[in-house]
Length: 364
Image (cartoon, rainbow, N blue to C red; front, side, top):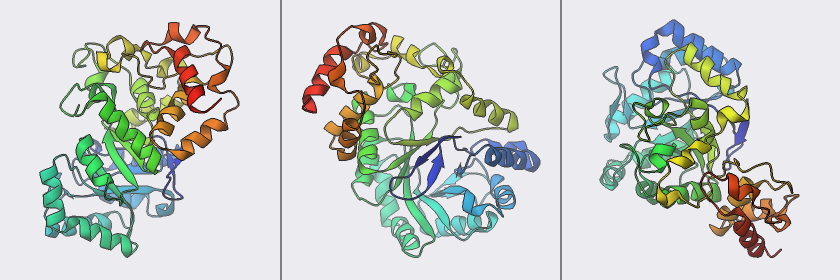
């Protein structure tokens, strides 16, 4: 397992976490086995926007002696009073639901308390007016909530909440379909979505990724909006390469799903390589580096994707990114314009010219 540190905290979060939207139907024994398998394999981040209330008491039992080793992402707005998932902005309902979740999980604190599924500005207004946001802030002041987070599918709304300066983590739907405006949650232009990810990196806000497979649609050519299927490993790597991303949260149905997902760490680079998306990316993505490093190896040893990422982040005002760039052993100025990367780039980025631009930006 690999881990990435939360910028606004000490937590080191596994790059693969666990979603709980579909596990409830597996039954208590299977849920327990999956939870145990996850922890045994280094997974320490668990999202609890579950499809029903089944995982809560099982997680509470399995993790009762491991509470300091796992992180719960709990949603203020996910309501389980009927046993099934419901969405609400009612403060009273949310208080009752959170109290039940804490009891079921056998814990008295929440690692990440999330503003839940705010996709419309009108929903945000209701959330604030009902007092839910103030309640989360109060719980944070009391030490019951360690970090405040946000769950959204809408860049414009996410930006508005980030402007408040209260969020340490954001859950967002990241996959090639949505980033290229395909599917119900493909909201926002390519540049708008990428700007959101870069802002998170710049401001130290971690991203946990939901819907990495677009609800499974990307995994079949019959349902893929591109008419071509991607693999789970390609989708996971795509999300992990985006700025700000700390962890990807696949929803699993059983232990077999989890075992297959964990195979990501043994998969060779070619099985993670998602450069095929360059063949069906929209015109807006043409000439835009997505940091996939399909262009490597560089004969001069440049890490082309990382250089591009640091440059884009530095231009967005990320001082740390500029510092990281300057510490690279091989910088953009070492480019000899051989054209190797240009010929291999699936997005037709003219990397030779880009390296010259980057070297000039950093004064080399």
